[in-house]
Length: 340
Ligand SMILES: [Zn+2]
Image (cartoon, rainbow, N blue to C red):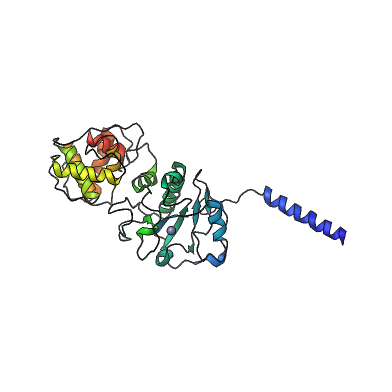
């Protein structure tokens, strides 16, 4: 008996050692991720084609969330979990299966959980996590030939825009939800830029960008751009190219809402907060800003707020003329060149 017990113990130790030395298995859907499956009681078969991505916050630790999705008491799951400290990605449900993370929208979405707490975004929403998550979302969209329609915060962080407008949005942005993640601290314009692909092209944002100082009394196209962008953020004002008191008030309110000093002056801090990544398929005031700016450079576009192929060609031509990476995406690098 004692001998048997020893044998059993030795066997258990070997199993434990063996498990410890096994390399982490890679995900087949997304090779940079670790495959660590959820309990099969926490997900089911797909009921619709994948068309959307849902951004979540765990409201708990990375390890705790992984272990929760492996517990049948959870009754919830997500396809991926991203670690705050370094952006490590764990896949828990195959993309071909339906994870349970966003109620009625589970059937057609892929869920990405981000380690952290919505009430402490500065602590948890790290660059490493944004970068890793954006690369994953880019892969999900591109592997299905889906256009990038990433929510940009228009209408407010907790807006519920229609699924046809955006195919990447937060849990809170889907219809009929009770959760508020990823919260007001998730930087949607930044995430959209990252999904579009890094910082080198016209769609990106270089850390060294400088912007013109624009304030009360100024006139011209860059004032018009500021007014269009304020409209896009939901402020009501007339686009007249004149930095009047109404514009100044809107700028101050916008600055307050973003935690910036509310001095009513648009400079290096306010410009990048104000600009929104804009690309083919987009519509609205931000597109009018792009079209109107390009017309200043002689492109002769109809300022209709619809980013079609004509606007795309003009953006690419402008980017080429300014020595930017030519990607047709108006990110901070391109906005800055237009604003000067
Ligand atoms: Zn959620």
